[in-house]
Amino acid sequence: MIINGRPVGADAPPYVIAEMSGNHDGDLARAMKIVDAVAASGAHALKLQTYRADTITIDADGPSFRLSEGHDLWGGQRLYDLYERAHTPWEWHEPIFERARSAGLTVFSSPFDPTAVDLLESLGAPAYKIASSEIVDLPLIRRVARTGRPLIISTGMASLGEMDAAVQAARGAGCEHLVLLGCTAAYPAAVSDSNLRRLPVLAAAFGLPVGLSDHTPGIGAAVAAVALGACVIEKHVTLDRAGGGVDAAFSLEPDELSALVVESDRAWQALGSAVVRPVSAEDEGMRFRRSLYVVADVRAGDAVSESNVRSIRPAGGLPPDAITTVAGRTFHRDTPRGTPLTWDLI
Image (cartoon, rainbow, N blue to C red; front, top):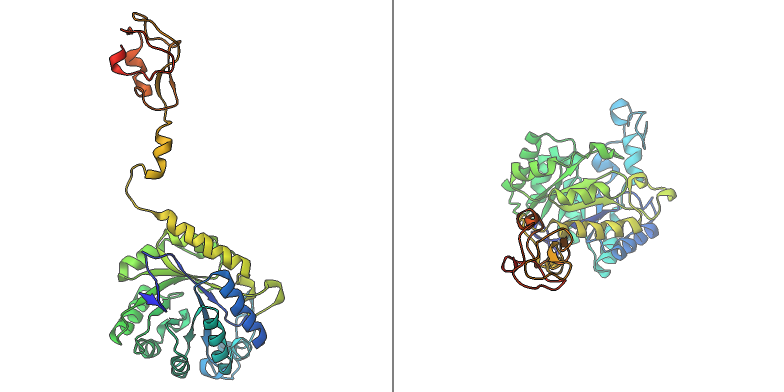
């Protein structure tokens, strides 16, 4: 598929999406610096999250509306308070979109309700992302699919049945370009929970391109995912993990994002083909494989021995394993040192 003019799929280098999320920390100037850093990193897209606290939950308290006390980052917080802190104000969207586009950066978002889709449509968003928790919101998926834009769906926490329902909802509403992202919806996620081997399973089950939405530290899991078919990589980004931000603990800093862009592209290039044969780049090396050579001047009638024939570099002579066949045979003509041993000499 094509997102804003760039191909996305197995035949193209990985599409790297930088997720700003709430790492702007409520400061528009900081948000703009993140945009600039993402553009400078070489990442292909910047992604926002489009919601208000009132569109994603309600202002209520009680166990159902609080994070568990043991949560690594947000333990005990009310959902409403967390989303109030983390949301990107809707009036910021237009200047952020403009800043990104002026820097040559594709920008889109994850909408969390139909009004968010309306806002993003008014801004000309070229694609959409469905967050893992919203994969069960089939009406939202259908609303997004009706825009006709490419759609990326994260599959964290979802069963295969729930994924299938989401895919069918998107296709049924007219979505023709769809990518599924493997995802472990833990914040942060342990590398050991990445289960990257599921990526080929998802690709085979749904006949769709796949990628990875990664919340682990560093870039190792994301780069490894490319070898298992990931054509889209999404990572959260912040200016400085030590500087705070709601998702800073599992976000990449700008230099790490740059490294991800470079190394994921290298991983994709390294895939090559499944054909087992020498490649043209090895032609010079082929000249210097070992073979049997005459290593001392010999006269006609001399016997082949360890002192006058050895396996050395370069190529050109009989294969090294032929030594047991030729040992003891005689040379039928004078042969100078440095001559490749061939059958016509003995």
